[in-house]
Length: 189
Image (cartoon, rainbow, N blue to C red; front, side, top):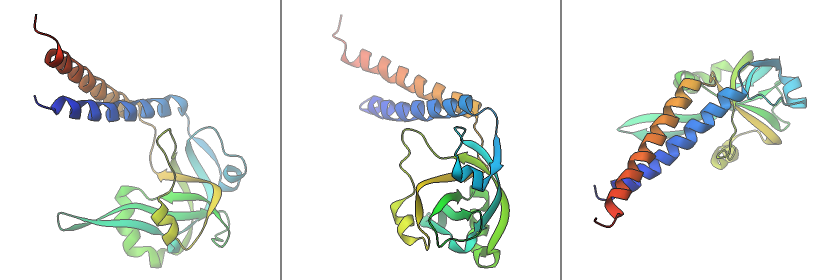
């Protein structure tokens, strides 16, 4: 078994924390909160699952991370400023992280998309491991973030089943690693 049990401990711990975070998110956000963007910025609700109306999504100010994997370009963190009036000269309080299924088309067409009036839905990023927007993206952005900003993962919903599955897999891996460690390090009887 070598040191595979250590790998199982690390992966099991990560899966357990991710599962616990998703289960907590699902328990705490059973209903989606609908409000205007202006109201959200003035008085952010405790709920992290939101539907915001009156949004001006500034695709022209989009920033993203691109990489190459197996010869193909991959996109991540496609981030777009969202304001109530379309003015990105003031600090931006809400950033939309574009859903994976829309990333490629958004990056390819951002010049023609301009600033659009949209209703955005998703989950506000947060949790004990969350550290905010990537510093490199902040430097690249032609807009500045407000002191208290929120990033909304477009289209994401709290999912109890995913959380429970991750939690179960993580706990199972930790139990297996514990069993292997006991077998390996117990004095022979």
